[in-house]
Image (cartoon, rainbow, N blue to C red; front, side, top):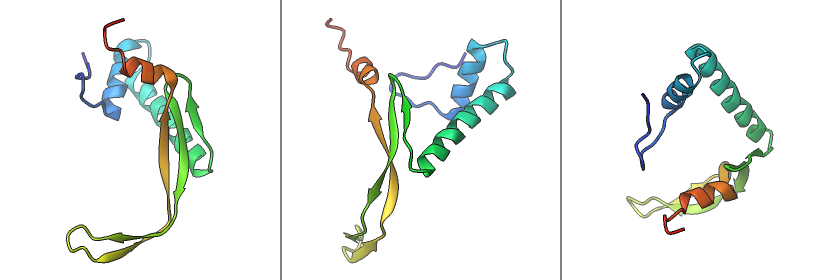
Length: 105
């Protein structure tokens, strides 16, 4: 039985194993394929400048960061940092509420 440790992390193979455990009518290979396709489609949407919204979980989008002058933390010397695009995640209301349950309801 694959159970993530509270406060731990879950990697892709653990997610696939958990889904296989909960769906014995599907093969592990089919589940791997589905997870890979879903993640690939999300990446493609972000590459195209789109947004991926998973209701109750959150939304992924891409933000642009301008070029800037940075510093090498080891030497303190100035370094030019190129402009780039970075993924941005905004959690959904349901996720935030579940993460902030304090038990004193």
